Length: 141
Length: 423
Image 1 (cartoon, chains in turn purple, yellow):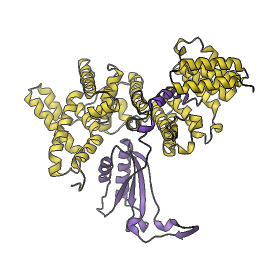
Image 2 (cartoon, chains in turn blue, yellow):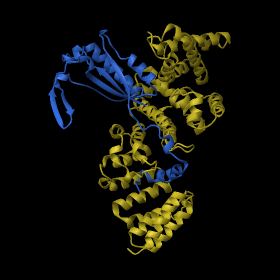
Image 3 (cartoon, one colour):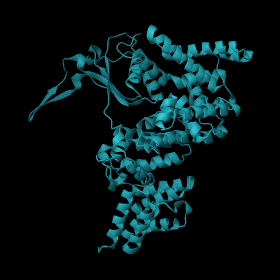
Image 4 (cartoon, chains in turn cyan, green):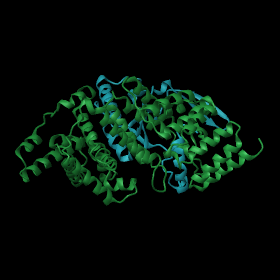
């Protein structure tokens, strides 16, 4: 399964304070660990909400609102996309995120919708057709 | 540390899946016996299942499991009064390196990585049958239980258990060393590892048994193994080539099935439904393969073909000439009538039906394709395009006779009929 790991903003991240050398080093090591475990698919850090824009939808109206936004705890500071076997595995990896300063933070894990269960759509008839595809897939015939 | 509100057993399972391969590999280096190493790792798991619900999950669960497994190993060796030397080995924390491992010094600076590589090469050792390699790999490297492997391969638990027991015995009888092959045989042994991973991937991508055609869990395990191996042996082009091929094929999973459950051919797929995250990863992996400047092999070439499709936003943008060139390379590395037939189809797209027909005609005497419906079906299509409807019709009818699939037969007969009608 694929999960999106959402790193919630903190006062420091919203203030645009760059992480300490120590944290950067530990995060780099942690990211490497994720890559070496075959877990990491993607991930980025986000600028503070002062660099962001919101577009509010209401009927036909589109209202553009410039950041920063007030509700710090609901904002994001970064995200990862991970391939894991279970939510428990995702939790286990999140528990290992370095936090050298002991600062309060929140990380949210959300499973990504995936068409990963085709169970009922695959009939034995389709399976036979698959043989044809095997030879054709790469040639695109 | 408590994990409030969540079942500790499931947490332990997750820890196991993260840690087990490195755990088994680390112990195997000390005891030089994969079967014993797995037993000890399992004992540590049982201890965790007994203790963690009370004590909570330790801060460093991997280290806890390793220490526990080592203690059990020492106990067991003492009890069994095994040779003193082995006990010393167990207590020894120093690295045991063989000259053959020197290659690794450049590849991986983490001793755990070396152990993991040794475990991978052992599980995929050529003395084992392909089935045994797959079972052992899923068990030792992916941390799957016997029951999970049996479920994935739609076979009984006892069959899988027997296969694993026999595989371990074979390794022991053959005195297979717990080591990475030396430089002289590394490429050949690596090819065996890559084949095992791709076998697992393919079983997920186009299952050979059961109701479900796609088993994403097997695809994911294979992808994960491939990604791990790419970090362990970053200098080997074919490892990246295999990863690229798997990422690119997996990227099309969603588009391969229509809403009605029908299979969708590549050129008819809705490309907006491709998984563009995986496409990007696949293309990057292919770049890494070429960047190694090492010898490329069949996986990199196949990934190159898949990448030609992935780069084309629309089917008509496909670089067919490049695909033909890649098939030329593939046909040289692993000559096969099926590769040749694919090359013909690509040549038809790149250079027109006449060029393709010449290749296909050379395949008509090929015994391996004698009952293969795709050969007459491809030939019929080319003849039809060349304005030879009577011959085309005969080929489509021949293809229809060769397929056991009723839907496929109906489609081929429909094509045959269309050839006869005035154009």
